[in-house]
Image (cartoon, rainbow, N blue to C red; front, side, top):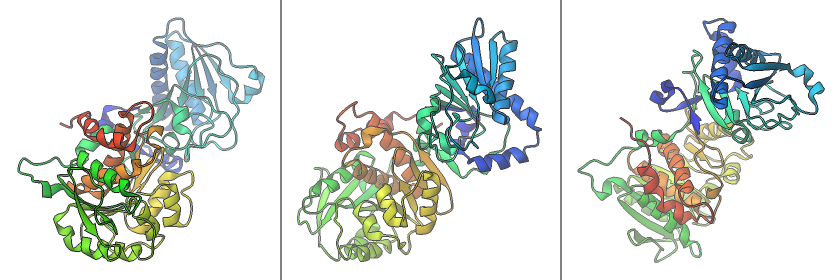
Amino acid sequence: MTRCPARWQTEHVIPIVTPAEMGEIDAEAPEPTDVLIGRAGAAVAREALGIMGGAYGRRVVVLAGKGNNGNDGRCAAGLLERRGVRTRVIPVEEVASHADGLPEADLVIDAAFGTGFSGTWEPPRPGSAPVLAVDIPSGIDGLTGEACGSPWHAVRTVTFAALKPGLVQGDGPGFAGEVVVADIGLDVTRATSHLVEDHDVVAWIPPRASGDHKWRHAVWVVAGSPGMEGAGWLCARAAMRAGAGYVRVGSPGVPEPTTPREAVGVELPAHGWGSLVAEGASRFGAVVVGPGIGVREGVRAELEALAAAGVPVLLDADALTALGSSPLPAAASTVLTPHDGEYASLMGRAPGRDRIAAVRDAARTHGSVVLLKGPTTAIGHPDGRVLVVRSGDERLATAGTGDVLSGLVGAHLASGAEPLLAAAAGAQLHGLAGCMSGEFGVLAQDVADHLGVARASLPRVP
């Protein structure tokens, strides 16, 4: 869980800036570098004292590099020394002399390398002491989060002004521990990427009004096919659990689609269903298309007919395969929800290690909101905005959870939420529901059935 100063809390989203962007922000700061280092060092020292539970009798070893990251560590060491902590600063160039491990300590501060690190890092063993990382664990790529060598696992990382991409994607989250964003007075308002937190879901999804009826939050699900009826069932159940007042389910070529008891099944022909759904879509707040419909000739034409209906459309699974790399016309209110393989179908290449850059590129290419699913889920808007979600874990890696996410986001779209926010809030809630669904053997239906509980657990926005 990420902690941050109250200033970020009021803005609802925590900024994420790349190492290159951070370099520009540092260069434009009105304060001299030594003032910024002083603030950063003070933030590190505060966290160090918090981890150790005080200063009396404590020992700290600081591994310090040659750049500003090392200077932050040296500043923290000086402040801790004044508080009575016995500190020892070991320059990075002396690492070879500590091949058998660092001296015994109550805390090791990792200030060897910052976000600009390149190469391979093989540090000495820190012993039994916990590690506090400065800005990012040394050896973690600041942009992609890739572990280069054998970085230390920190119990906490103090990063400055904003999160860095390497802290929220790739190997980074597994090495960073708890991440604390320290405000040192830098202007990060230019950030176009942000981390989603629980309270954002409530702020972004319009509540129901007292006079609402079921059609004001209606979702039409086009999912399932012979032998794949469960996809439509899961999608519909999730939409209802997420607040859809009415859900209609049609499975192309299936006379009697399988639906939850509370949903309404309708027959759709195997061909020409896109025009039929488009004709009736005006009564619905959103249409969800793709899970389990199969890949066959003509689906692309069906999607083009549906895109002209003028209502928000979510495309997932087989619909993404049919879409391919050619963007749909009139796609501004369309949400695409690919996993890595489907992303490759949309873009002609794998997303690569930088998922934030990958989703931004896909959103611009297709002129749609794109939700790239994975351990780090990134949601991109055509205008360059990206929202990042880290709420889920490996329990979501089971068949059908993608169908649940589609129904959930569809319900958010039907509530009137902006597509980018509907998708990001859906991904955050999806992860929370997965974590509430048990420790082992979690099924997609379990995730769907915990959506209401997860939503009720969210903090209220004043």
